Length: 365
Image 1 (tube, rainbow, N blue to C red):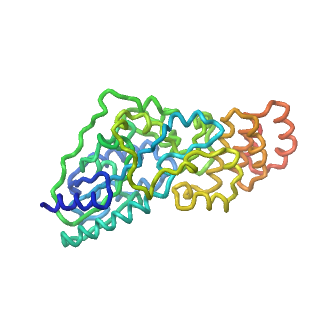
Image 2: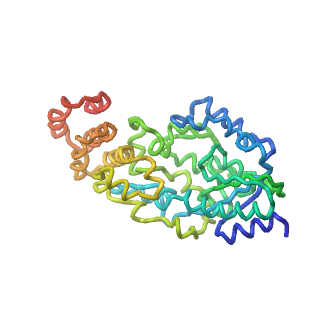
Image 3: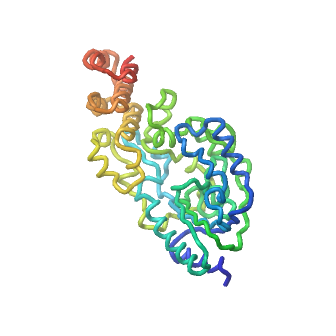
């Protein structure tokens, strides 16, 4: 067996669902796409995306000759679109409603890298979404799938549900054939986006993406995007969930990152009441914790405002004295949506004059 064949067998033994090899040295178009993305300002607050080392694998590590890309399925066993109808509950994206995949995949990837280093005698470096390496273009080059019109990787075997990890190796390993695009005329992902975040097929404006706004964006959610958020409180699965290639995806096999129902969907009233300590306990070891309690509860209150349920007004009112202006501001917005005009005016007379933060005062109107 060749080194490539033995490498793939070892990856399967470790439980990875997909693996491919790409030439790390070859020129690629991804740098041009990234340059355009940054020039248009579509990265929003994500200044880290402008690092020069992101332009090519050899810019990150000049000695890399091969890139090994692995995939781990996280196909959910529920219907993300149907969950949008449960308006009194908040939805966490399928990737985040589980143990942090970085920890699980990186552990297995390190084992695979150590095996490769022993077998090849060459240096290796391991990456799981924590370094300036463009993993999706590498995955396409390695044959795992292609970047669909929603800019995410699509696999013929696993649909849009793959976590990715990569090993750069100084060894020269026979590369696999790059995957070709199989989106055809389909535009399901583009049409499903609630905020029109795709200026064109294969282009994303993160500033309009609910995943970016609910996770990365540090400020208040713009009024334009609050109603479209619905009950999404961390991330958005819409463009992934509607992909027709998902019909071939099997339920995720890696039990250590199994979807947790208690994290996927939870009552908004319960989530709105979380203080920092309770938030940290509830989301310990998950991707949600990284965003922090204030931004998370900000998102929850947007969902409260979108619920159409006046019974949730008390959950929003309890947050009017919160220490975070992000939370207070969204509590006001939620109350304006849930209360009649007279009830809202009574709250305004009691709270608005005491508010020192201009952004919150603006919400009172």
